[in-house]
Image (cartoon, rainbow, N blue to C red; front, side, top):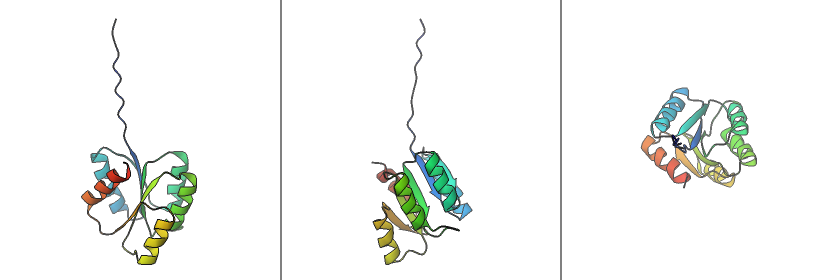
Length: 128
């Protein structure tokens, strides 16, 4: 009798939300190389639709987005999926923006430009 061996590989799901398409694609490609399953959204409305449709473990979220802001996306996301860890990124983060992001549930706030290896470490830490 033949035996079937099933191997289940758990891959953590990440959504990258950034209107800078080059940075979003680069971030996505590097995370995929590190073993993550990644989706990308280039605006907040698309991100919210995807978050409603699929569970993610981590969201990398830009503060400045076309349409609705990153803070609004963060607030709405945490109503939909309260356990989703969010790493907010921005080149325009001031103290009040950082404080508001934390109030809304951001795990951490990183300044652009950020070190991509550092971002990968933060994603892994957020998953623990």
